[in-house]
Length: 263
Image (cartoon, rainbow, N blue to C red; front, side):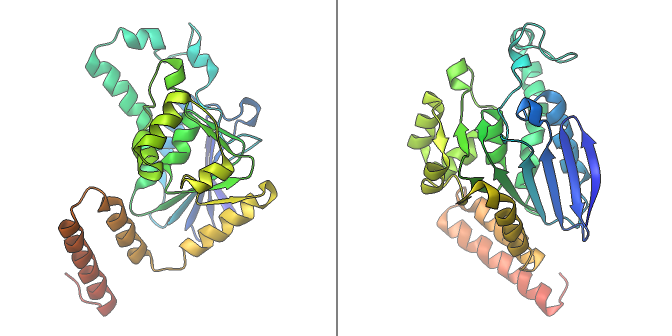
């Protein structure tokens, strides 16, 4: 049994009965879940409103495509009502442009929090902002028809919704550069081979595979998962000696917790 906690601007949030698993659904299938600033604000609101009991967040999408990227309305002279268009942004000061893009990025940042494990279920197209939203999650399970592409560079822009770092971490600098600079499609089979996808399954098995993985992620004690995620996320930015120290500190906290000894 699930409860609906939010449904606005193409984003739906549902919680399971224990409020341990939150499912975030992109719900604009008629527009192939194209993204807009309104959708980004709704996604950011989801991150702020999650109950503290949530351990796993599943990101999925209705329809044939995960997300076709930024809504094409953004590329028209009118843009989105009440939002600065590309040409208007170009006339802003550096500080103001930075503030606008930083607000948009909030929709893509909270998925990496150490207190949750985020899991994207990807079918069909994940283009541009859709690709970056999938990259925002810790894990990706893909249907066999999934196709990723980073089209921003082909449009004269850059990926600016937090996707560049996880892409490099997952596939390496050279492959990330090639994917971004060419804007080509990365199909599901290749995505699994290069480490972009954790698992690829037939489309009809996607929901079941995601459910099984979410259940498996709930098996270990929560605090152990939180500490482990923090260790792994910090590993690339620390020296070997620093990582050894971080492991010792984390293990000491776990031992005290298991023994019932408070700090």
